[in-house]
Amino acid sequence: MVPQDQPRLVLPNDQDLTYAKLSLDPESVAAALTLPLNDPLARATVWASMWSMVRDGELPAPEFIKAVSELGLQIPEAAVVSSLLRQADAAAERYTPASHRQDVESRFAARLAEFIAEQNGGDAQLAAARTLASLSLRHGSQLDLLAGLLDGEASAHGILGLEIDEQLRWAFLQALVAHGRAAQEHVDAELEAKRTARGAIAHRMALASRPERRVKDSALQQALSGTDEDGQELSNDHLSAVIDGFGADPQNLTSGYEPEYFASLNRVWGSMTLGNAGRVVRGLFPSVAHPEPGQTASEHPAAVRTAAWLEENPDAPRALRKLILEEQDALLRSLSAQANVGS
Image (spheres, helix red, strand yellow):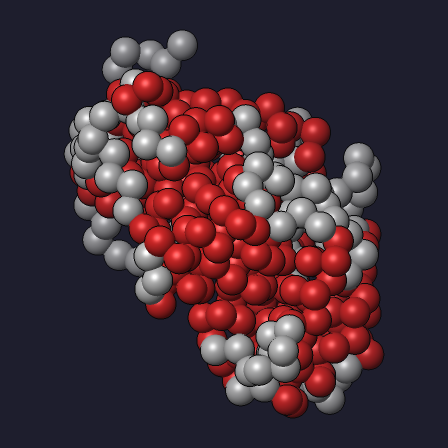
């Protein structure tokens, strides 16, 4: 019990007077995870510090996600809510260990569905719907809701005011496709109903999201070559769409692609524009990884392969090595943070 004459939360750099990376003390973290803050600037500073602590392995990702679900959704600034939801989604994907992930993502998805139904329009409701679509690419507990919303049954699910625009329709459809709940004819019909540049990009991602091994193999080859199935060069956005579709893989059909990725790096870098090469290097890097019990971050196969490539390619272009070093840092950070959950 905190004494009455003692502060519940100590906030260094109050009023954000200087650049600083903060790490809150345990009592302050406990308060921040359970009590709302009224001052907008202090609130933003505290949430930023907690996200930094998640990435540093100082705050378990499930606790952060729970706080976002309970406190973050109450914040009046929709832009802040949107940012926190993106961070919570990333925390579930990259900083939550496999042993906790199913439960954490199920609870998070359920809370998002509740929040969407509690609102009646507005940017926060839309941000929650977009996050639910992103989460549903990996976790299928709310697919019936997404399918109903696509079919115009929002009121039947108690949801009012949600503007399901083109971007959100495609996000819902991509999640359904990734789980085998929508076939190619549904994807083609969606594009035919409204042909736009955005729709064409989303259509390509959805096709690469189909849960078939041949589809994933084709998407990988398209990404590594920078060309489509007909040998035509992919534009920047369409290349990113293929990469994103390849990564939409709740069935883990892409397992084992990493050796081909690392073997192709120098060729990719030498044959594509810098922009497209960077998309491939970052987009296909095995950044989402989960350690086995007792396994250190550096012992994970993805970390071992990354270290081996860096050692074996000391003369690779500096820009390429820089990208791999940055991805390696993010990977080790993710693995270390997961190892600290429950330890």
